[in-house]
Length: 168
Ligand SMILES: CC(C)(COP(=O)(O)OP(=O)(O)OC[C@H]1O[C@@H](n2cnc3c(N)ncnc32)[C@H](O)[C@@H]1OP(=O)(O)O)[C@@H](O)C(=O)NCCC(=O)NCCS
Image (cartoon, protein in one colour):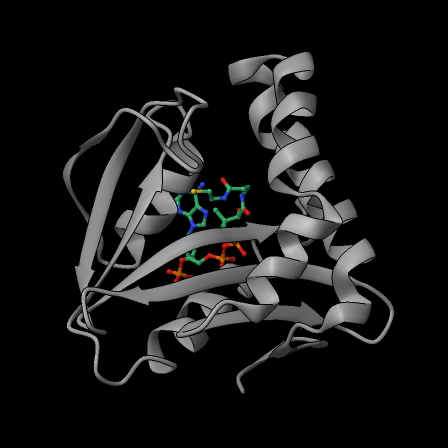
């Protein structure tokens, strides 16, 4: 797996779940409090980033759950799953802790995910229109906007998002 400074990438496991939850909650507040408000971010992270929800992802078939570790902390994570008979990969989560952003971890996590699905033709993701930093990052990786989604993430949360896509 690629090396990013002192961080190395590896597959997530059950024992990583509490640290992954902390990473996601802190990164979500840093990224989305200004967009959705702190209370709404708490509501979302309580459900989406519960230990049970993260544990279920570890067991999901045709998926990859990778993280960046430097031996002292987890700096970032990515989760993706194959759909449409393996033709399409959906990047469901890509989060780098605010203290670890801008040093290549996001790019390395994406490169790892991209090579985990050799039969897939393209990769898609959803990103909030207001998350301009992430949109710039994905554009840098070669993604293009192809549509819109009215219910990003999990059904029922009514979070609109842009759909981005890149050939693999
Ligand atoms: C968006 C995110 C995943 C990017 O990861 P990162 O580790 O900070 O980014 P990297 O250091 O790997 O940057 C990779 C490339 O993207 C560019 N890039 C990163 N952030 C950028 C920004 N805000 N604007 C422009 N370019 C950016 C870098 O300059 C770099 O370019 P290079 O390949 O020419 O050197 C990370 O910042 C993050 O988790 N943000 C908060 C959560 C979030 O929004 N996640 C995405 C949800 S859809």
